[in-house]
Image (cartoon, rainbow, N blue to C red):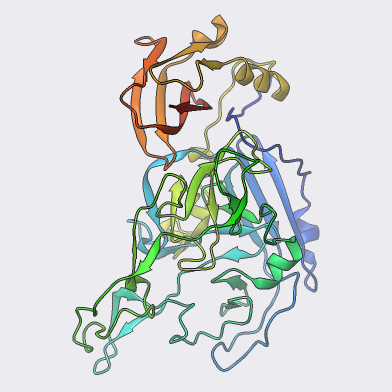
Length: 405
Protein backbone atom coordinates (compact mmCIF):
# COMPACT_ATOMS: atom_id res chain seq x y z
CA UNK A 1 0.00 0.00 0.00
CA UNK A 2 1.31 3.40 -0.91
CA UNK A 3 2.22 5.61 2.01
CA UNK A 4 1.30 9.28 2.23
CA UNK A 5 4.36 11.46 2.77
CA UNK A 6 4.16 14.93 4.25
CA UNK A 7 5.51 17.34 6.84
CA UNK A 8 3.33 18.94 9.49
CA UNK A 9 4.20 22.57 10.17
CA UNK A 10 1.65 24.67 11.98
CA UNK A 11 1.22 27.99 10.19
CA UNK A 12 1.73 26.85 6.60
CA UNK A 13 -0.99 28.00 4.28
CA UNK A 14 -2.97 25.46 2.35
CA UNK A 15 -2.06 25.78 -1.30
CA UNK A 16 -4.80 24.59 -3.61
CA UNK A 17 -2.67 24.30 -6.70
CA UNK A 18 -3.78 21.74 -9.27
CA UNK A 19 -1.66 19.38 -11.31
CA UNK A 20 0.28 21.15 -14.05
CA UNK A 21 0.56 20.42 -17.75
CA UNK A 22 4.15 21.45 -18.39
CA UNK A 23 3.79 20.83 -22.13
CA UNK A 24 1.00 23.40 -22.30
CA UNK A 25 3.12 25.88 -20.34
CA UNK A 26 6.21 25.45 -22.49
CA UNK A 27 4.37 25.39 -25.82
CA UNK A 28 3.06 28.90 -25.13
CA UNK A 29 5.77 31.18 -26.49
CA UNK A 30 3.78 34.41 -26.73
CA UNK A 31 2.06 35.13 -23.39
CA UNK A 32 2.81 34.50 -19.73
CA UNK A 33 2.15 30.93 -18.63
CA UNK A 34 2.90 29.50 -15.18
CA UNK A 35 1.64 26.73 -12.93
CA UNK A 36 2.42 25.73 -9.33
CA UNK A 37 1.87 22.21 -8.06
CA UNK A 38 2.69 20.42 -4.80
CA UNK A 39 3.53 16.73 -4.59
CA UNK A 40 4.27 15.46 -1.09
CA UNK A 41 6.87 17.77 0.41
CA UNK A 42 7.98 19.39 -2.86
CA UNK A 43 6.48 22.43 -4.58
CA UNK A 44 7.24 22.64 -8.31
CA UNK A 45 6.81 25.60 -10.64
CA UNK A 46 6.58 25.44 -14.42
CA UNK A 47 6.95 28.73 -16.27
CA UNK A 48 7.71 30.06 -19.73
CA UNK A 49 9.33 33.09 -18.05
CA UNK A 50 7.46 35.63 -20.16
CA UNK A 51 6.41 38.71 -18.15
CA UNK A 52 2.72 39.29 -17.53
CA UNK A 53 3.21 43.06 -17.37
CA UNK A 54 4.70 45.88 -19.41
CA UNK A 55 8.49 46.02 -19.75
CA UNK A 56 11.15 48.37 -20.99
CA UNK A 57 12.69 48.15 -24.45
CA UNK A 58 15.01 45.23 -25.10
CA UNK A 59 17.61 45.15 -26.53
CA UNK A 60 18.85 48.50 -25.22
CA UNK A 61 22.29 50.19 -24.91
CA UNK A 62 22.95 48.55 -21.54
CA UNK A 63 21.48 45.14 -22.36
CA UNK A 64 21.78 43.69 -25.88
CA UNK A 65 19.38 40.78 -25.34
CA UNK A 66 15.78 40.24 -26.43
CA UNK A 67 13.09 38.62 -24.28
CA UNK A 68 12.16 35.09 -25.34
CA UNK A 69 10.13 32.23 -23.87
CA UNK A 70 11.92 29.70 -21.66
CA UNK A 71 11.18 26.21 -20.38
CA UNK A 72 11.67 26.87 -16.69
CA UNK A 73 11.15 24.26 -13.98
CA UNK A 74 11.90 25.16 -10.36
CA UNK A 75 11.29 23.22 -7.18
CA UNK A 76 11.56 23.96 -3.48
CA UNK A 77 10.35 22.51 -0.19
CA UNK A 78 6.61 22.94 0.28
CA UNK A 79 7.17 22.68 4.04
CA UNK A 80 10.45 24.54 4.57
CA UNK A 81 12.74 24.28 7.58
CA UNK A 82 15.40 26.61 8.94
CA UNK A 83 19.01 25.70 8.17
CA UNK A 84 21.87 25.69 10.66
CA UNK A 85 23.62 28.43 8.66
CA UNK A 86 22.65 31.04 6.10
CA UNK A 87 23.25 30.61 2.37
CA UNK A 88 24.61 33.79 0.79
CA UNK A 89 23.64 34.18 -2.84
CA UNK A 90 26.94 35.66 -3.98
CA UNK A 91 29.08 32.96 -2.37
CA UNK A 92 27.72 30.12 -4.49
CA UNK A 93 28.63 26.59 -3.43
CA UNK A 94 31.82 24.72 -2.66
CA UNK A 95 31.05 22.45 -5.62
CA UNK A 96 31.61 25.18 -8.19
CA UNK A 97 28.23 26.89 -8.59
CA UNK A 98 28.93 30.61 -8.84
CA UNK A 99 25.70 32.12 -7.50
CA UNK A 100 22.21 31.43 -6.22
CA UNK A 101 18.97 32.88 -7.52
CA UNK A 102 16.80 34.06 -4.64
CA UNK A 103 13.42 32.70 -5.65
CA UNK A 104 10.49 32.86 -8.01
CA UNK A 105 7.49 35.19 -8.19
CA UNK A 106 3.96 33.88 -8.46
CA UNK A 107 3.96 35.04 -12.09
CA UNK A 108 6.78 32.58 -12.80
CA UNK A 109 9.64 35.09 -13.14
CA UNK A 110 12.90 34.74 -11.24
CA UNK A 111 14.18 37.02 -8.47
CA UNK A 112 17.92 37.12 -9.22
CA UNK A 113 19.57 40.10 -7.49
CA UNK A 114 23.24 39.17 -7.97
CA UNK A 115 24.98 40.73 -10.97
CA UNK A 116 27.87 38.74 -12.40
CA UNK A 117 29.83 41.98 -12.70
CA UNK A 118 32.84 42.93 -10.58
CA UNK A 119 35.49 45.57 -10.08
CA UNK A 120 37.88 45.45 -13.03
CA UNK A 121 41.56 46.33 -12.86
CA UNK A 122 41.86 49.26 -15.31
CA UNK A 123 45.35 48.17 -16.35
CA UNK A 124 45.03 44.39 -16.71
CA UNK A 125 41.29 43.81 -16.98
CA UNK A 126 41.49 41.30 -14.13
CA UNK A 127 38.29 41.02 -12.10
CA UNK A 128 38.26 41.33 -8.32
CA UNK A 129 35.37 39.09 -7.31
CA UNK A 130 35.46 40.40 -3.75
CA UNK A 131 33.73 43.53 -5.07
CA UNK A 132 30.41 42.76 -6.74
CA UNK A 133 28.70 45.57 -8.64
CA UNK A 134 25.25 46.48 -7.30
CA UNK A 135 22.87 46.24 -10.26
CA UNK A 136 20.50 48.76 -8.64
CA UNK A 137 23.12 51.49 -8.21
CA UNK A 138 22.76 54.61 -10.35
CA UNK A 139 26.48 54.25 -11.03
CA UNK A 140 25.98 50.87 -12.72
CA UNK A 141 24.34 50.51 -16.14
CA UNK A 142 23.16 46.99 -16.86
CA UNK A 143 20.21 48.06 -18.96
CA UNK A 144 17.55 47.56 -16.28
CA UNK A 145 14.05 48.73 -17.15
CA UNK A 146 11.48 50.40 -14.87
CA UNK A 147 10.86 47.01 -13.24
CA UNK A 148 14.53 46.79 -12.22
CA UNK A 149 14.72 43.85 -14.60
CA UNK A 150 16.67 42.93 -17.70
CA UNK A 151 17.37 40.00 -20.00
CA UNK A 152 19.99 37.28 -19.88
CA UNK A 153 21.79 36.24 -23.10
CA UNK A 154 19.43 33.24 -23.37
CA UNK A 155 16.42 35.59 -23.40
CA UNK A 156 15.26 35.09 -19.79
CA UNK A 157 13.71 38.24 -18.33
CA UNK A 158 14.38 38.39 -14.57
CA UNK A 159 14.18 40.79 -11.63
CA UNK A 160 17.15 42.44 -9.89
CA UNK A 161 14.83 44.59 -7.78
CA UNK A 162 11.11 44.81 -7.06
CA UNK A 163 9.04 45.33 -10.23
CA UNK A 164 6.74 48.31 -9.81
CA UNK A 165 4.19 46.84 -12.21
CA UNK A 166 4.07 43.60 -10.23
CA UNK A 167 3.20 45.54 -7.09
CA UNK A 168 0.39 47.30 -8.92
CA UNK A 169 -0.91 44.07 -10.44
CA UNK A 170 -1.02 42.39 -7.04
CA UNK A 171 -2.64 45.34 -5.32
CA UNK A 172 0.28 45.84 -2.94
CA UNK A 173 -0.65 49.20 -1.44
CA UNK A 174 -0.04 51.05 1.80
CA UNK A 175 -2.64 50.24 4.44
CA UNK A 176 -3.06 46.60 3.43
CA UNK A 177 -0.82 43.64 4.13
CA UNK A 178 1.20 42.59 1.11
CA UNK A 179 -0.15 39.66 -0.86
CA UNK A 180 2.01 36.60 -1.29
CA UNK A 181 4.31 37.46 -4.21
CA UNK A 182 6.48 34.35 -4.47
CA UNK A 183 8.58 31.65 -2.85
CA UNK A 184 12.28 31.68 -2.06
CA UNK A 185 14.67 28.92 -3.11
CA UNK A 186 14.29 27.39 0.36
CA UNK A 187 10.49 27.34 0.10
CA UNK A 188 9.68 30.17 2.51
CA UNK A 189 7.11 32.73 1.28
CA UNK A 190 8.00 36.18 -0.05
CA UNK A 191 6.08 39.40 0.62
CA UNK A 192 6.42 43.06 -0.32
CA UNK A 193 7.20 45.83 2.16
CA UNK A 194 3.71 46.28 3.68
CA UNK A 195 3.48 44.02 6.74
CA UNK A 196 2.10 43.95 10.28
CA UNK A 197 3.82 46.29 12.74
CA UNK A 198 3.75 43.54 15.35
CA UNK A 199 4.80 40.40 13.47
CA UNK A 200 2.66 38.25 15.76
CA UNK A 201 -0.50 40.37 15.74
CA UNK A 202 -2.68 40.39 12.63
CA UNK A 203 -4.69 43.20 14.18
CA UNK A 204 -1.71 45.54 14.46
CA UNK A 205 -1.15 48.43 12.08
CA UNK A 206 0.22 47.95 8.58
CA UNK A 207 3.67 49.52 8.24
CA UNK A 208 6.21 49.90 5.47
CA UNK A 209 9.11 47.89 6.83
CA UNK A 210 12.69 48.72 5.93
CA UNK A 211 15.83 46.63 5.91
CA UNK A 212 18.56 46.82 8.54
CA UNK A 213 21.27 47.54 5.99
CA UNK A 214 23.12 50.83 5.77
CA UNK A 215 26.02 52.27 3.82
CA UNK A 216 29.35 51.89 5.54
CA UNK A 217 31.03 55.09 6.65
CA UNK A 218 34.35 56.27 5.30
CA UNK A 219 36.14 55.12 2.18
CA UNK A 220 36.90 51.78 0.58
CA UNK A 221 40.33 50.30 1.40
CA UNK A 222 41.42 49.72 -2.21
CA UNK A 223 43.92 51.59 -4.39
CA UNK A 224 41.60 52.00 -7.37
CA UNK A 225 43.73 49.55 -9.37
CA UNK A 226 43.47 46.13 -7.74
CA UNK A 227 40.41 47.02 -5.65
CA UNK A 228 38.02 49.98 -5.63
CA UNK A 229 38.72 53.13 -3.66
CA UNK A 230 36.47 56.13 -2.99
CA UNK A 231 33.51 56.58 -0.69
CA UNK A 232 31.08 53.80 0.12
CA UNK A 233 28.23 54.95 -2.13
CA UNK A 234 26.36 51.79 -3.04
CA UNK A 235 28.17 51.03 -6.28
CA UNK A 236 29.16 47.66 -4.81
CA UNK A 237 27.09 45.36 -2.64
CA UNK A 238 30.03 45.32 -0.24
CA UNK A 239 29.42 49.04 0.39
CA UNK A 240 26.59 48.03 2.73
CA UNK A 241 26.61 46.49 6.18
CA UNK A 242 23.90 44.87 8.28
CA UNK A 243 23.03 46.40 11.66
CA UNK A 244 20.84 44.35 14.01
CA UNK A 245 17.53 45.90 14.99
CA UNK A 246 14.71 44.97 17.35
CA UNK A 247 12.87 41.67 17.55
CA UNK A 248 10.32 43.05 15.07
CA UNK A 249 12.99 44.04 12.53
CA UNK A 250 14.11 42.11 9.49
CA UNK A 251 17.17 39.92 9.85
CA UNK A 252 20.27 39.72 7.66
CA UNK A 253 18.28 37.86 5.00
CA UNK A 254 15.44 40.43 5.08
CA UNK A 255 13.23 37.92 6.84
CA UNK A 256 11.46 37.43 10.14
CA UNK A 257 9.02 35.11 11.90
CA UNK A 258 5.42 36.20 12.11
CA UNK A 259 1.83 35.82 10.98
CA UNK A 260 0.56 36.76 7.52
CA UNK A 261 -2.87 36.50 5.88
CA UNK A 262 -1.81 33.23 4.22
CA UNK A 263 -0.07 31.88 7.34
CA UNK A 264 -2.24 32.97 10.30
CA UNK A 265 -0.35 30.71 12.74
CA UNK A 266 3.02 32.18 11.83
CA UNK A 267 5.97 31.28 9.63
CA UNK A 268 9.37 32.61 8.68
CA UNK A 269 8.99 34.84 5.63
CA UNK A 270 11.04 37.19 3.47
CA UNK A 271 10.27 40.80 2.58
CA UNK A 272 11.25 42.76 -0.52
CA UNK A 273 12.03 46.25 0.74
CA UNK A 274 12.32 49.64 -0.91
CA UNK A 275 15.88 50.07 0.33
CA UNK A 276 18.94 47.85 -0.10
CA UNK A 277 19.04 44.93 -0.53
CA UNK A 278 15.47 45.12 -1.96
CA UNK A 279 15.65 41.41 -2.87
CA UNK A 280 17.32 39.48 0.00
CA UNK A 281 20.92 38.42 -0.54
CA UNK A 282 20.83 35.29 1.61
CA UNK A 283 18.56 32.38 2.50
CA UNK A 284 17.74 31.17 6.01
CA UNK A 285 16.33 27.78 5.07
CA UNK A 286 17.55 24.85 3.00
CA UNK A 287 17.55 25.93 -0.66
CA UNK A 288 17.09 23.64 -3.63
CA UNK A 289 20.17 23.39 -5.85
CA UNK A 290 17.96 24.00 -8.87
CA UNK A 291 18.32 27.70 -8.03
CA UNK A 292 22.13 27.63 -8.40
CA UNK A 293 23.90 29.14 -11.40
CA UNK A 294 26.85 27.29 -12.86
CA UNK A 295 27.84 24.19 -14.87
CA UNK A 296 25.39 21.24 -14.70
CA UNK A 297 28.28 18.79 -14.30
CA UNK A 298 28.93 20.42 -10.91
CA UNK A 299 25.32 19.83 -9.91
CA UNK A 300 24.31 23.44 -10.59
CA UNK A 301 20.71 23.93 -11.62
CA UNK A 302 19.86 20.35 -10.68
CA UNK A 303 17.17 19.80 -8.05
CA UNK A 304 18.03 18.08 -4.77
CA UNK A 305 14.59 18.55 -3.23
CA UNK A 306 14.15 14.81 -2.77
CA UNK A 307 16.97 14.84 -0.22
CA UNK A 308 16.39 18.18 1.54
CA UNK A 309 12.60 18.34 1.80
CA UNK A 310 11.45 16.56 4.92
CA UNK A 311 8.85 13.83 4.41
CA UNK A 312 7.62 10.91 6.47
CA UNK A 313 4.60 8.71 7.08
CA UNK A 314 2.90 8.41 10.46
CA UNK A 315 1.04 5.37 9.12
CA UNK A 316 -0.22 4.04 5.82
CA UNK A 317 -3.72 5.43 6.10
CA UNK A 318 -3.32 8.95 7.46
CA UNK A 319 -4.92 11.81 5.53
CA UNK A 320 -3.91 15.46 5.43
CA UNK A 321 -6.91 16.29 7.62
CA UNK A 322 -5.75 13.71 10.17
CA UNK A 323 -2.25 15.18 10.04
CA UNK A 324 -3.63 18.61 10.83
CA UNK A 325 -5.70 17.13 13.65
CA UNK A 326 -2.58 15.59 15.20
CA UNK A 327 -0.76 18.91 15.01
CA UNK A 328 -3.70 20.77 16.53
CA UNK A 329 -3.89 18.25 19.39
CA UNK A 330 -0.59 19.53 20.79
CA UNK A 331 -0.89 22.48 23.13
CA UNK A 332 1.41 24.54 25.34
CA UNK A 333 0.37 25.97 28.70
CA UNK A 334 0.49 28.39 30.24
CA UNK A 335 0.90 30.69 27.28
CA UNK A 336 2.11 33.39 27.91
CA UNK A 337 4.43 32.14 30.64
CA UNK A 338 7.19 33.65 32.74
CA UNK A 339 8.52 30.40 34.16
CA UNK A 340 7.63 26.93 32.90
CA UNK A 341 5.72 25.74 29.84
CA UNK A 342 4.08 22.31 29.74
CA UNK A 343 2.94 20.12 26.86
CA UNK A 344 -0.39 18.41 26.35
CA UNK A 345 -0.70 15.77 23.63
CA UNK A 346 -2.10 12.30 23.15
CA UNK A 347 0.00 9.21 23.82
CA UNK A 348 0.36 8.41 20.13
CA UNK A 349 2.14 11.70 19.49
CA UNK A 350 4.01 11.78 22.81
CA UNK A 351 5.61 8.41 22.11
CA UNK A 352 7.08 9.76 18.88
CA UNK A 353 8.51 13.12 20.00
CA UNK A 354 12.30 12.90 19.87
CA UNK A 355 13.55 16.44 20.24
CA UNK A 356 12.39 19.89 21.22
CA UNK A 357 13.97 23.14 20.06
CA UNK A 358 13.10 26.75 20.79
CA UNK A 359 13.83 29.58 18.35
CA UNK A 360 13.60 33.30 18.97
CA UNK A 361 11.88 35.70 16.60
CA UNK A 362 15.12 36.06 14.60
CA UNK A 363 15.20 32.32 13.93
CA UNK A 364 18.11 31.71 16.31
CA UNK A 365 18.03 28.48 18.32
CA UNK A 366 18.03 29.30 22.04
CA UNK A 367 17.28 25.90 23.60
CA UNK A 368 17.33 22.22 22.65
CA UNK A 369 16.41 19.13 24.66
CA UNK A 370 15.04 15.61 24.22
CA UNK A 371 11.39 15.03 25.04
CA UNK A 372 12.35 12.13 27.30
CA UNK A 373 14.25 14.55 29.50
CA UNK A 374 11.52 17.14 29.81
CA UNK A 375 7.72 17.05 29.63
CA UNK A 376 8.01 20.70 30.62
CA UNK A 377 10.61 23.37 29.95
CA UNK A 378 11.90 26.11 32.18
CA UNK A 379 11.94 29.33 30.12
CA UNK A 380 12.59 31.70 33.01
CA UNK A 381 16.03 32.60 31.66
CA UNK A 382 14.76 33.57 28.23
CA UNK A 383 14.34 37.23 27.41
CA UNK A 384 10.80 38.57 27.25
CA UNK A 385 9.39 38.14 23.76
CA UNK A 386 7.87 35.80 21.19
CA UNK A 387 9.29 32.33 20.53
CA UNK A 388 8.65 29.30 18.35
CA UNK A 389 8.85 25.82 19.81
CA UNK A 390 9.57 23.01 17.36
CA UNK A 391 8.91 19.37 18.22
CA UNK A 392 10.55 16.71 16.08
CA UNK A 393 8.76 13.39 15.45
CA UNK A 394 11.06 11.47 13.14
CA UNK A 395 11.17 13.69 10.07
CA UNK A 396 7.97 15.47 11.05
CA UNK A 397 8.38 18.95 12.48
CA UNK A 398 5.57 20.64 14.40
CA UNK A 399 5.95 24.29 15.38
CA UNK A 400 4.05 26.16 18.07
CA UNK A 401 4.27 29.81 19.04
CA UNK A 402 4.46 30.97 22.66
CA UNK A 403 5.15 34.19 24.55
CA UNK A 404 7.62 34.69 27.41
CA UNK A 405 6.44 37.50 29.67
